[in-house]
Amino acid sequence: VMDVLKGCIEMGVKNLSLYAFSTENWKRSPDEVKFLMNFNRDVIRRRRDEMDELGIRIRWVGRMPKLWKSVVQ
Image (tube, rainbow, N blue to C red; front, side, top):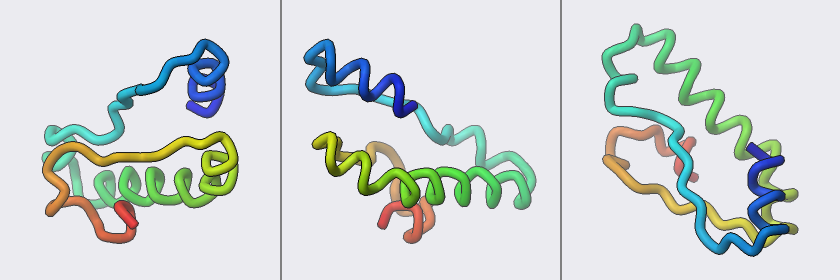
């Protein structure tokens, strides 16, 4: 994803939509949902400084009340 983000910046793309978690994923086992939520949260945390330096902002779209607060934060 970081390669795509950097490529978009180089090409002058101002907005990019990425698909991270589908409502269909809620039908998965609790362990799978937990893995996906933790994965998304951890990737964003690890890359936060790098994304900030590149001027990347994240905006969430969708049914946020179901998302873990730790993911959105």
